[in-house]
Image (cartoon, rainbow, N blue to C red):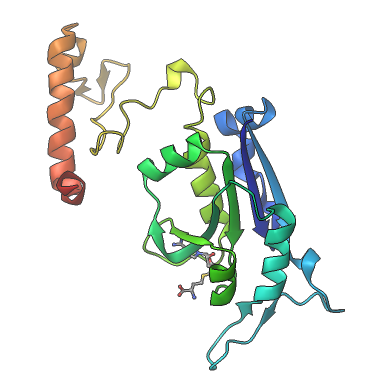
Length: 227
Ligand code: SAH
C-alpha cells in the first residue's frame, strides 16, 4: 500500500500544482503515492454554501465552521483511518526533516488547509488534528504549506528519488547543513573549484566536506548543533 494523501481545501484546483512536476510528479504517475484534494465547500449545507462565520468574541476576519469541516474530514477519513490528521497552522509544531521521514514511512496523511483567520478550535480537538507549521511567518492559506509538507515527505518515499538523487548527505539529515557543491567548468569567472575536490583523495574530500558542514552550521544555524 502506497502513501495516500488527502487534502481538504477551499482551493482543490491548486493541486497537484507543483507536486505534479519533476520527481514528485513522476512518483505520482508511477503510483508510489496518491493525492486527492476535496472541496470543503461541498459539505456546506445552506443555499449559499457557507463555510465560514464571524469570530466569537469579535475581531476581524472569518473562521472556518467546525461542523462543515468535520463533515469533510469524516468523508475522506473514517474513524479507523490509520493516517495522521494534520492541520497546517502557523501555531503548529515546526515541520522537520525527521518528521518528514516518519511520515514517509507511514500510510499517508490527511491534511486540512485553513483559510481566513483559521479554524474553530473545537474541530481541532474533536478530530484530533495535529497542527503543523512550515515556519514563523503567516501565509494566506494552508494550501502552499500542505504542498511544502507533501513535497518534503514524498521525496523520501522509497523509490521516488533515483539512486542518482540520493538524500543521505543532505542538509538536516545528520543535524547539519550541507557542504558547498561545485561542478564544471573548472574555472568560473576566475574562481576555481577547491583543489581538494579534484584531488581524487576520497578520504580527504570527506574530511573537507565534514569541516565545511560544521563551519557553515556553526555560523548560520548554531541551533542545529545544540540538538
Ligand atoms: N490567524 C491565524 C493565521 C491564519 S492564516 C494566526 O494568527 O495564527 C490562514 C491559514 O493559512 C491558516 O489557517 C493555515 O492553514 C495557513 N497558514 C498560514 N501560515 C502558516 C504556516 N506558517 N504554516 C502552516 N500553515 C500556515
